[in-house]
Length: 308
Image (cartoon, rainbow, N blue to C red):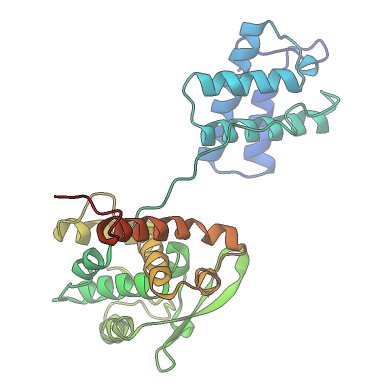
């Protein structure tokens, strides 16, 4: 079904956005959610083009794309959302070039407004201690404690945790082998309390796991536990301890990195433990660390303390 108000290309009224939609779904096999997101961004661009009287895709140049991005930002779209919108346009015009509909890609080289860095939330040591004070009274609670202890002990990503197989654990050596982003493997240390929690869970696991199931963490049906199930169990235990809303598995990783950096001051070591390809990714935790130091300074330094 044609999209109303679309610019023309080479004198035709072909719905290129619709064609691109099919290309993403059929050729690139992207998820329906991703395809829908592309469609939403491109429909917004098509509406803007109609308002500007642009009826031919081939007439659109870099200045048009830049104006569209600026207008989107001025209308209240956050910088990260403008970046996604420009990314969709670059992909779309690359497709049009492939089809011979346009001579070049006008979205190449157009930058979105710089997004401010959002510092990750963390739990402090006391909050983390409350969350890990769970006293298991069932096999599933033993599993949940082992999951949370391992997330905090080793700073695992959620995908790394749910992907663990029994062969990845070496509790005698207190290490775990994980497959991170880009299929890069790394071996992580596991703390004593996490080892104890894992041992307690593994004693219970045999009664729950389906035959031949290799996953370390399984659900009630005996199959590998999914990411969503881990998110829900973490949120449930956080609520039970009266912790702030929004506690999720990645918060353990942020807390792991922040607490380790506060104690060690070794940014390179934290980078290696997190599995970051670039140290610039790890440096966001130095901002958190500085905030911690600034609070200590303001409360302790004779020239910084507030009187009274």
